[in-house]
Length: 271
Ligand SMILES: NC(=O)c1ccc[n+]([C@@H]2O[C@H](COP(=O)([O-])OP(=O)(O)OC[C@H]3O[C@@H](n4cnc5c(N)ncnc54)[C@H](OP(=O)(O)O)[C@@H]3O)[C@@H](O)[C@H]2O)c1
Image (tube, rainbow, N blue to C red):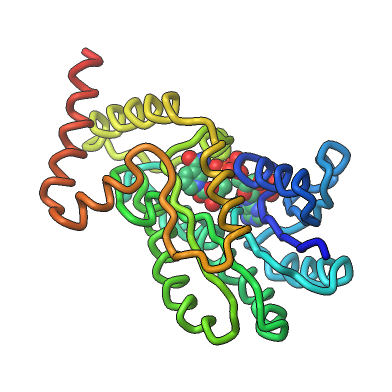
């Protein structure tokens, strides 16, 4: 029997690539988007409407999903966005929106699926965290907070679901070329004291993303996870993805110095 796999945020980036690959491999894929009608004719898998920040949307999505399939095998929590900007320049409202999507939305959707997984006594939950769920960098405080929150939550959930044969894993990519920058939101307040630092950081981040890798490695990791019987918890992907958390773990001082040095070096090469 074909396995049924749900991929949230399958309209773009990692989600779209993964859902397409899974479909090619013969899985029955259900993807989601807030606007599925624009895409349905362009993708080979079924798209359903879902906004993970909207409780009614989650409930009606649940009804639709389980009218399409009797059993779900894998949930891939991929939907999310990036809020960039300095912490103090970000309004609390914007910060809440970041957590509402990346953290609460992911948890609410997981809660929709969990009773089905428990009843089946099987299931797999794979969640897109980020390297920013393991380390934290300037200009992404709320994004890092949302991904750290996911790491903490799912680490506990993994223990709790063990007796039900439900596997819980995270994937922590560094920067990859998707539509994450185009779809990102930016802190709306500007404080003059931060002007120089903000400008440097914006240029530095833009440069990092321009040089970022194609998303193939992330899709490959996700495919491996779907096919693995007993996946471990963390799966950092991309250049430096294991090195930076390790440096931070052994010496936060060394980690901090290298982040500051890199930003300063970038600033001086610009002049
Ligand atoms: N690209 C990177 O460098 C990177 C690195 C680390 C982690 N990640 C994580 O990877 C995941 C996928 O990001 P991506 O890079 O592929 O970005 P992307 O190309 O911008 O795709 C984001 C997807 O999330 C969906 N989405 C956003 N808000 C949603 C909401 N409220 N409800 C339902 N769906 C929503 C979008 O669907 P619709 O707009 O169609 O609804 C879209 O399909 C995210 O969780 C992101 O944090 C990305």
